[in-house]
Length: 445
Image (cartoon, rainbow, N blue to C red; front, side, top):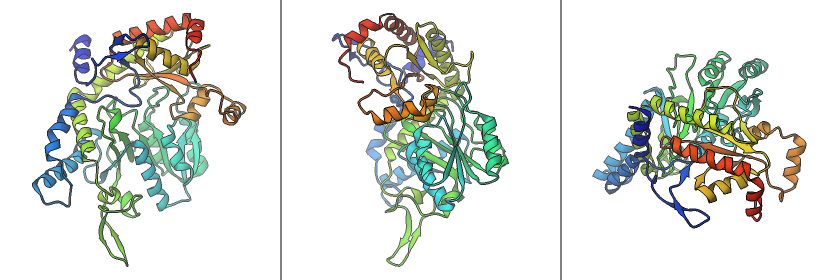
């Protein structure tokens, strides 16, 4: 399938591509969504599955009615589909349904903390706050450094593993940065972590939707112990995330959420918890979310994750090559041609605030981007070379606009024509900064 045909085929899989939106002029245009790292639009196949399943929607596990049994089967079948998608172990691993990646990591942090509160967690300087803050109040946390190009620094990981001499319980790392798009060498990290007796958690929120991820067998030094990701970043709304890991991790501790559905038997004298994963899914589950995620995985798998990754990889490289020629642009980070990255990158144009740039792109061209600190504050602060004095200034002056960047992130449905329109608009803005700053002088940052 040639690139033009593939691009058209992929675009037709996604809802909302022809929905018009208004510009500041009142003109209606077809929008360009370059904010896929935050949330993706739904696939047609996902919405068809929701509508097909809706008449059969019912309670799960405890009901004996026909619809309840059918709903229970769909719910459990989802676990099998998810395991196959990332090559989790069929018998040793479990899939716990959550609301999103953030909840998945928080649950795991509580579970591991109950096991042993004295050990150390190694996070990194490039993490989303969801893979940083949950560990801070439960463990001693140290951070693996980034190198001068913003990449994960393997040597510093080994230095810290040696320094702590077997006390590191977990190395927790993003699969791909939501700021720079860099793909981390998760299998090399896993191998090194296991060498020093630690386990590894991969935050797959930005990785799993864009390329094939293999958790690998338990006897492999490159085995991924824990993996988390979110459905809403892979074309399946309705609020579902997953936490995948060894069943034995969840057998010994009390669940984070307690209530109906996670117990076998309770009296006023004792509580007997159910077996995982049920033990960690208290309350009425999000069956629609599971149905959506399962449908999305089946569609993505039918296309081929390697095909999707190559297509998006070509898109982002094309965009970077065009972005480099825009006056006064600062790219975070572009180390060399063909960096190993997912389909996103962040940038600024000197002399124009990131929030204003995002507003102009939306108002004038219908181009949606993300701007700010991307919930990865320490990483962005380092990439912007902000000092402790700078941060104290922003911390103490709430009326001062915060620093940040603009991020473009592509989904499978984006195309080269959209990138060309972005580049054209950015060139126009870069060459007419004073005009746009005056026009939008009343915009609050």
